[in-house]
Image (tube, rainbow, N blue to C red; front, side):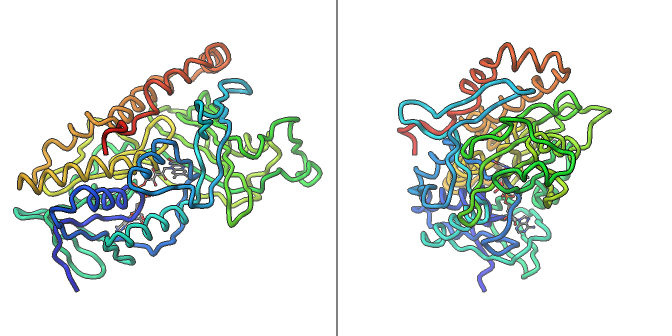
Length: 400
Ligand SMILES: Cc1cc2nc3c(=O)[nH]c(=O)nc-3n(C[C@H](O)[C@H](O)[C@H](O)COP(=O)(O)OP(=O)(O)OC[C@H]3O[C@@H](n4cnc5c(N)ncnc54)[C@H](O)[C@@H]3O)c2cc1C
């Protein structure tokens, strides 16, 4: 069994697979021996609402991949609301592009794995990394299937990244939390709910999505979502709550209670569904992104702080990391001193640090009065900020 590589990528999620796909496309001439080590076996479950923005699709398209090959739902309207009013965002531009599409992550990640394998990328599944040790010449990766060596190790292993913990230590964690449930498309009839009566018109149309900032005054720096999703051909709803924890508060309502109250408004009872939770680490520009022979990508470094959106950024990280690795092999300099700077300067990095900045500011306005003022009187303002500072970060057409 081969154990010596030029590059080892730890984690076959969107960030690890995107790094490998970009290396395969952009550094083919260097003939770098690359492997992805993944602790699970695809298709594997992954807790996620599966919202992919046009930026993610654009990165995939540049890699020759079309997300529409997968079962998906086009979101034709997204409502950014606070207590019933706010900003409805319709289809984009002349082409009437969906605001975003939802996919199931087991299907999406498996599809990326299959495409990576078709391009000759080696992926070893059921290999759990237990430790990473850096030395003069590279890094040693200790797994439950033996030891591996490489010149470069990419930590693409998600919010709980073992690479970050072992190599960089756990600095200030910058971690939020999300809870999620899957429900039927329509809420059960009121009679079945003993005491809960859905308000007229609370249910969204099947292809609409809701981001409701109602939890903010309750000490939660986040929102409740209600997205359409397609599971084995059946239309369902994906409900959840995100708390970035970016503005720390002494008093914070339990996430589960806030989600339950919101779902009850639409006629669902949370207790009827299986609730699952997972941390989301968000991007903090000051955090360490690399060290000698090691790079972090995706959630291992950080998703967007404002909304916890991380799939498209994960795909974007892959391109930045692949460029940095290519240049390291050409220059024979594996310090990765400038990786953090390279990321900051990239269009993805700019969008990520602006999101952190906006989240720190926005979630400070936690009083009901401020949220009402923002969403009821200046609902257009978040839309303008989002359009100017957050979305549209994919590389220009001329870039690869
Ligand atoms: C409830 C919830 C809802 C979300 N909804 C959305 C959404 O709608 N849209 C959006 O854009 N983002 C969403 N996100 C965020 C999104 O899921 C992440 O940002 C995204 O998955 C990051 O991709 P990644 O490749 O960096 O990490 P991951 O997808 O977490 O992949 C990491 C991979 O590494 C593997 N791994 C971990 N440890 C090891 C180890 N020790 N050895 C080997 N392999 C290992 C894992 O098995 C996994 O396959 C959501 C997150 C949560 C929790």
